[in-house]
Amino acid sequence: MIMRNLLFILAAICFMACSTEYETEKESNYSIESANLAFEIATKISNKQTVTDAEWDSLMASSGYQAYFCIGKKIPRNNFLKNAFEVAFDESQKHTLDSILNEPFKLSPQMRYNFMVLNLNNYKERQKEVQAFAANTDFSMILEKAKKLAQSYVPEEIRESEVALHKVNFVLIEPNAYVNNCGLVVDIHNAYNMGEEELIKLLAHEFHHNYRGINHSISDHVLFRKIDQLQLEGIADLIDKEIPPLDKIGIYPQSIVDTHNELFANTPQILQQLDSLTYAYIAGEIDEKSYTEHMNSFFLDGGHANGQYMSLKIKAAGLTDQLIANYNDPVSFIKLYNEAVANAPSEYQFSATFIDYIEELKREHLESNVVTSEEEFKVTFRVEVPSPSDEVFITGNKAALGDWNPDQVKLNKKDASLIREIKVQINSPAAFKFTRGSWGTEGITNDFGRSQNLKLKFEKDTVVNYKIYNWSDSNI
Image (cartoon, rainbow, N blue to C red; front, side, top):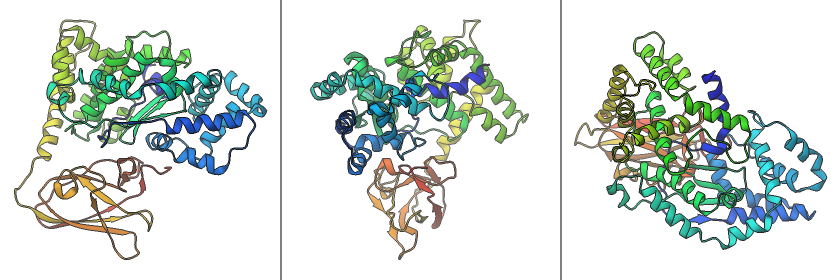
């Protein structure tokens, strides 16, 4: 029952849509450009005026919707927004609108689209108020308050550091907020409905991910990624989430509310399943492929319900200071939770085997990132790109690789071919990514549609070859 319900929580993107990969932006700012363009198009459709292809293209190309499509890579681009806007605002499509509004909301590929139509339809009732909110709100003040609130959940040394926060893009989408290194996207209608205090909390939650991303490096092991999700969202949820059981989650159906409440309440059993599965893998009872497949059934809500449960237990045990001090160390998070529930028979404590295993994963990761030699070697990066027009930058953990600036080190074209190349002199090991010049255009070098840090260890002059299958801002 628990595992089946976990699949359903994918639908609850309204409540907990956050990516676990983050980079800092160069500027702290916001934009309502996309929201204003959306307002104009909604008004034109309502007034039975023709929206030109150029106007639709302008909306899709605006910074907010570009970030929206980049963050939600599974969102179909072609006509997705256009259809939703036309159904919501075109009176001739009232029959289609009524059909969507009367349809039970359930997990399906159509769900995001249906919620967008629902949100746009609700926006119609308060267009003037929402537009006035967008035009007259002091978002700079709200962002500053959100920043200070987020800072109260990070260590003092991080609080005092200069961290550029995500650019906030206000748009008209489903009543949601999304974030990763493409930026932060917030539905303007939802922001209006939340009110200033709740909007500050929402933004602080997302800004907390910025602070956590400073010098944050973890093992690529699937288990480590999962416990990192628990901590990532568990601490941030202390900022803005109410304590379950919840009566409602925005405009979303009761089934999603019930599923979230069940996940929260069943946290001890879910953690026990995680421990048991990991023990079976360590003992050789299941192979790596099976373990990975089973692991993908855990925390599909991004870690919110169970991470919040664990953080609340840690807080209740008087360990909040330790929680904040170790805010980007998933192993410490697990151990703090064990300490918090040590004298509670109804709670589940992770086994010593589990703790030893994640500590070993952490140790192996730290050792793999230690410079193996002071000597530098010549490394030639040779990259095949999808299109002859593609320009490629490399960015990584060395000065010669741009120190994680995505637009500093450009690879050279090799004639008119798809090959790009650069030779640098660096020491080992190296961690890096490829981009087209920004964090919203990362290169995907695998076959599962996700960008990732690449790692390289070497003890001599080396030539390495990579293939970029697609870019993170492409419709994959």
